[in-house]
Image 1 (spheres, one colour):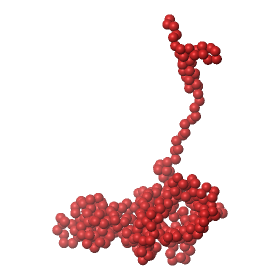
Image 2 (tube, one colour; image 1 turned 135 degrees about the horizontal axis):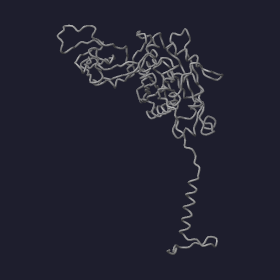
Image 3 (cartoon, helix red, strand yellow; image 1 turned 180 degrees about the vertical axis):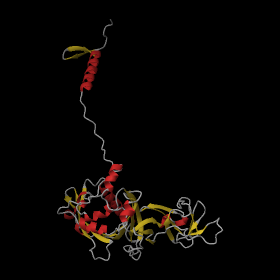
Length: 409
C-alpha cells in the first residue's frame, strides 16, 4: 500500500489530508443534490387565439364582418406606371389598375370571364384595358371583353364581361363602395373635402394589420374608461412606466331621424400629464394653456374611415385611419397624415408614432376578446347601447348571408 503523500491541513487542531477533504466535499455535494427538492417549472400558457376552437368561439356572437360603406382598397401609388394591383378583401377578389391613356382608375373582379385566370397575376395594362395573361383577352374599364386576339367574331358577346365596382379617388386613395344588396352608393365620403382647400399635403403613412373584427376599433369610442386603463400610460417606450395621463372624452351618436346615420363623433383631450405623482398642469408654467390647446376631434364615417382632426399650438393636423377587412378577423389599417406647410414634418411624425403606439396598447385586448352580445353595464360605463344602435344601422338584409356565409367565416 502506497503512503498518502498529499499535503496535510489542520482544521481546529485536527490534521486532514487534501485528498480526504476533496472526497468529503464531493460526497456532500452528491448527497445534497440527490436529496434536494426543486421548484416545479412554469407551465406553458395554453391560450391560443388562432386555434380553431377559439376562432369558432369568437365567431359565435360578433356581427357580420362586412358592414356597408366605403373602404380604402389601395393607393394611387399601387397602380401608377401600368401596375395591376391585386386585392382580396370583403369576401371579394379584385384588381385595380390605371388606364395609360385616360389616367382613370378601374376596379373589377379579379378573374377573367373567359376561363377564370387571375388578372392580377401576369395581367398587363394595354391602353385603358387590362389584358389577361392566359389567352390575351382584354377587358375595358367597364369590365367588358373588347379584344379576343384569336377570334374572328365581329362582336364580342355581351355575356363576356366581369363585374366592376363603384369607386372614387380621394386624397391619393382609391375608395370602393361595398353594399350587401349591391345598391349604388347611399352616401359619399365628405370629411376629406377640406384637405386640399386648406393647403394640406400628405406627410406620413403608417400601415399595420390587426387580427380582430372591424367593429372593435370603432366601439372604442363608446368606452371612455379604457382611456384611463389601457391608455393611461403615455404611449412612449421606456417612459410609459413613469409618465401617465388623464383623458376627457365625449361622444355623439346619430339620432333615429338623422339624415347622416353613417356618422358618429368623438372628442378626446388630455386633461393632465403626470411624471410619477407630479401633475404637469399644476406644477409646470403654462402647462394648462398647452394642454388646453391640444384637442382631437374624431369623425367615424361609416365602418371604414376614421377621420382625426388634431388641433395643436402650431397648427392643425389631419389623420385618416382606414380599415379594410381582408378576412372577418383580419383588418388592414392605414393611417394617412396630412398637415399644412407650416407644421414641421418632425412634429407630424412624432404624433404618428404616438398614435401607432396607442393602437398597440389596444391590440392585446382586441385580438383576444369575444363579443359580449349581452352586456352587463354599470353606472360609469360609456354609451355602448347608442354605439351598437349606430353600428347595426350599417348592415342590411343580406349582410348576414354575405358575411357569415362566406368562405372565411
